Length: 126
Image (cartoon, rainbow, N blue to C red; front, side, top):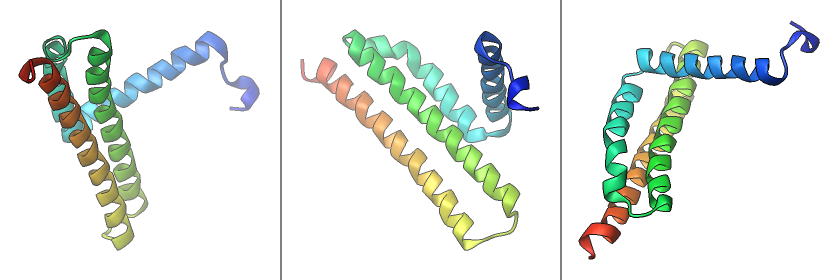
């Protein structure tokens, strides 16, 4: 398909939305870590209004959970690509996968820190 044949405008946005939904569906089906983090995030969503005390705090709490999902999607994509390119053990690929795992871990620490800090400000330090 040449660039002239590619959809533009609203049809392009509709196709892009379809690709995004396909990616979320694939992550849900094939990635246990994504499912677990998504379930925990969905369970936490209603508590945003209990932990936070302002629209900005609600936004920070929700965006922290979305950042975790984004990080896990990148982690899964990079690991999948590494496995496809080199299915046998390779030291560099192992290190790349460890980098990805570390990124997810750090994002989890950010989520926990934000939730505790905002909860502390609004409930513990009253």
